[in-house]
Length: 154
Image 1: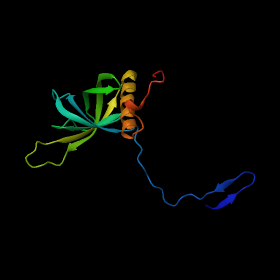
Image 2 (image 1 turned 120 degrees about the vertical axis):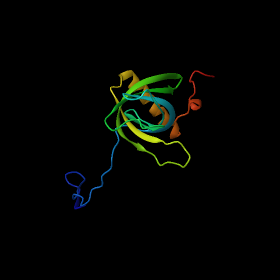
Image 3 (image 1 turned 180 degrees about the vertical axis):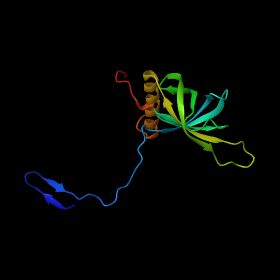
Image 4 (image 1 turned 90 degrees about the vertical axis):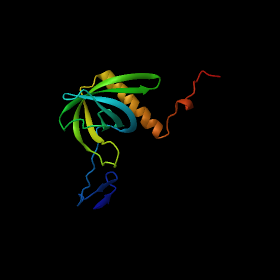
């Protein structure tokens, strides 16, 4: 801080920082989940995977086989439940990154894959956002379906 002034109104004169910290900001909030899915690619009939991390703009998968290389397009059927509604969203996505995970001796190989959703219909995006924020809310303890009371109840 260089100077504090009170006229004509309270304000500070600040100096420019000598060092800046860079923080990556994601497009969307993410939630930890465990949702089994099958991923379809142009070259394979389907790869069994599990969505471990989900946001309105993408997902992190753990798969039994390599899903694809960066830039390839895939499709997955994503079964979700929000409130009392269940839907399966058919999502087209672009592979952003992928690679093998550390292998445990004697265990089958596993692969990770980061996906970015493409061309999501508005109704599907709203449902996905509702799902994500419902999980964020319950994870932070600020919402519980049992804690909501009907104002008309006796």
